[in-house]
Length: 265
Image 1 (cartoon, rainbow, N blue to C red):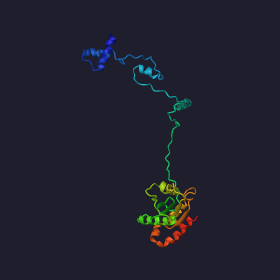
Image 2: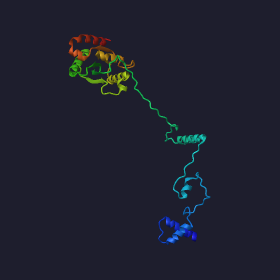
Image 3: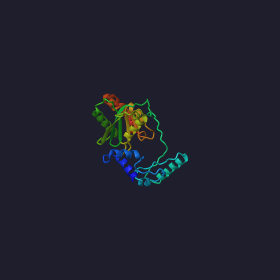
Image 4: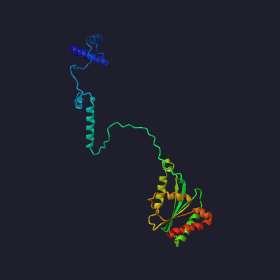
């Protein structure tokens, strides 16, 4: 009984409750016995860290014992292999290499495929008349008399086809237009592909098309198109640009001769 009283007095003292005992009694209690812990503890008990979490939780500690990892490389390799096999059995899980990923800072420069012989800054106007005639002419950036060259294109088409021009469409293409990315602007192959796709869009439904390319600048670009392009295989006549024909009427005779040649083929 005396030992229990001593332990109770010590515990109450640690909680700050000492007024219910005389001072002399408290002092005697503290001197008589001061155990290391107010709870009994069996020093002979050994703990096994490999026990399961439920046995630890049943002891009331509320935490999981840390797993002991083996430093043996063979055991570690088997563990990784087992993890891969376990993840691969689940089709919804995408398993990649579990080895460490090393990242390197690499400066990637855009591939430059630039042909200096070709112009990389131009604007063209395309007219498709009566689903037969395709007229592609270059126009200056600052050119604003589009109504005049449109009227000229329709008169030329009417004279060549020898029929009224009731059905026609017009479209504009420019390079590089609003592009600023050097990966696109500085690549001639991208420029040629863009122009080729632009013209081919208007070939659908056109029967026996004839292509007239007006302007020396755009003539070099069209000639550089891939050999497998549909545009390259079309019968073609090269003449001066329509803005030049509009400003210099004397050039119309020479242009008419060239266009007549392609119609006779």
